[in-house]
Length: 146
Length: 185
Image (cartoon, rainbow over all chains, first blue to last red; front, side, top):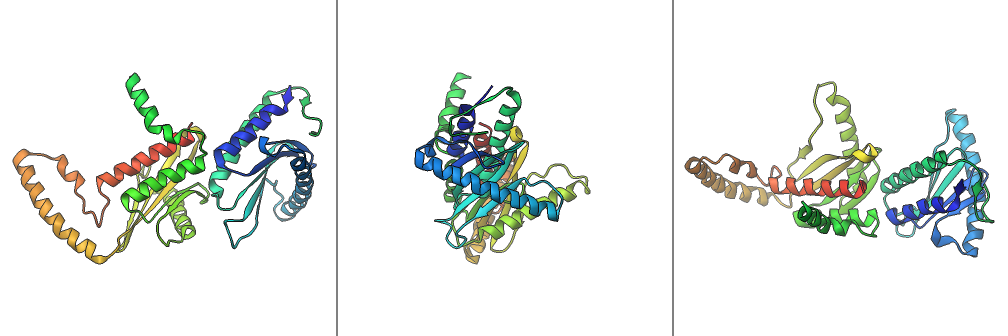
């Protein structure tokens, strides 16, 4: 049986290890699966759902572009803001974790991308191992849909 | 055995706390950088992306990262053609600085990071005065060697301005051990 708690635990570990500001797990359609502990109030929830929907749009367009150019599968998208001032900039990494599950990570641009990618890879492995070993229905919060 | 275990834990406790890896790595690199008068110290991943950094000078870290990474990739590409075993470390020696590269294997993750250190020689006089002092020291050591038949004593006396001495190499080994500890937890 798959529940939200372990997935949330993986996201919290990612946050502690790497110092990222936020992480969300969504489906390919942009529906929220879970997010780390610190952005679980109602305002954040609305924002997370919005982010999920926008990410789904970005993903579908990027997939189409990659398909057009290389006929290969999309794996990761990196979005950087505020290139001039690294202090205030925010970087987003969108990674395909398992089948149609997507991990979204937001972190300040001053953090090193190499370390964040390493941590994401570790979390990706944990999530996919967990999902592979589980059978049955998903048990999630009412606002979370898979 | 128990004592050793306690000693190890107390020594590495500061890197094994609630702190994230980013802070722990920065701490380790800055410790090394401040101790050994290093201009820049970087940890780079296999794709040439920066994992952690310590910059003590006006050095373009991006250029140093790309340079170190491409050098390492090419070395690994051609070492097979030359029938060379694993490279221990790579040192580029110029008139005003030394670039030191060493791979950090992370067995648990089946990956390798690269440690790139840039030592800058501050002025030319440093080198000249060092040659003089080293010549005197060398003669004294030669005398000691003849007197006591000590072989190992020469190992530690590479010229400080041209080569890295054993003390720095040991410090670097220590840093690599700490980095491996952080990632293999």
